[in-house]
Image (cartoon, rainbow, N blue to C red; front, side):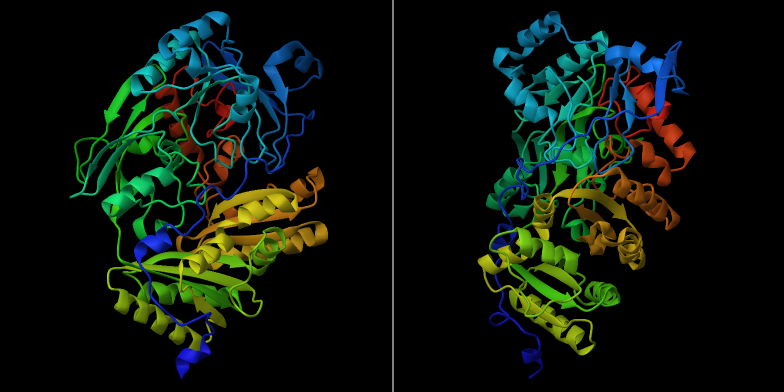
Length: 560
């Protein structure tokens, strides 16, 4: 029978929604102890000065300039990007003093004003240990009012701040560059309301994504967002970075699922946009300014999000394909034949698979032979029998057409978890392998793997180039793994990757944001007129520039 042509570990069977939704790793798949470092070095670059309140830039022409700047100048490179080479601390920003600390203790209480060096060391460093600031203070507000008081004071004193949630970002957006005061919203973690008729959830920004998923599970609903870092990341950070994740192909981006939010601007004003309506055409929809702006326009304090009913049938298939063209055709066929139940379509290449097998314990290839590409297809529906039969028929048809060379459907919780472990464990395996240069690109699906092949030809034996990601969304995670970081390799990677992406009308940041890593590279994806308008919005909402400085927008537009 045709069914026997598709190898599988056990018969095709169905299983309930709860088992698969909860089968992925419980915590962030990458340990915070993963090694990495920041290399300090001297380099020519641009300094940015301020005259009569207006920002402009000027070239460094004389080596004596840096000596006169003293502590205002920090020279460093964050490995993984050549964009951050020389940044000047804004000379108009104040430095923290004892009176500031005393004020914060008055409004927050002593235990929520953190000066402990060990805790600050963690808060100053991103989880990949690639970006590190030197903040001397972390504040833990418990509610919106306290955030408002903090920002009002910091704005009056011109103290720069960096909003922080779970600190799981990949572009240095959630840690200080210099001595910015860290405002961590982790104590703001309450679910405020849930409507079981509409499925609208209202919560504070410090709620951990996985905790929200657990809460909704008891109500018969699921979050429209699912990330590998769900055990650590906060919903406020997810919204602020417009995180994508595994379910975007089914439920869309946060620009569509976030119905409203509350945000505090730099001067302490609280913007109540916490609507719960799916339709509201009264004026400008300002919440979208704060979705994806990485805390540079305001601090998100509350979120209203549309959740989805938890359906009774989830199936997960792990499939092997001989070439990338087959992956593309399989995606087209999946959309046509599984459209209403398709909930994830992920891919990884053989280099990614080998890396996981070599660096993660207990992981094995679910299919019998090695192939060039692997696909994970998840379906979610309400008719267990029909959904199973539909997926089986799709896989058999794909096998007949030669699109699939091997495959297996998970038959229990453990097997489903092992499938997801391969895909979500790539980041951890990369960190264990050594130095890694990471790029999060959005490209036309037909172009996605061309950049991987081109970069392999360009780098040769200097590095291991691999590609994986959300094929259903046109999102490639391009990773270059090497034994160590070096400027020669980086010079071959950048700006080549950005130029290639721009040439093919892609985006240099699909879902990770720009942060400090790619702030200067925004012009590869956005026109100068568009960036200028962004800068004017920033100036309007944060005229003193205290909110997450040195991030998102090019340093040439500000005194950063």
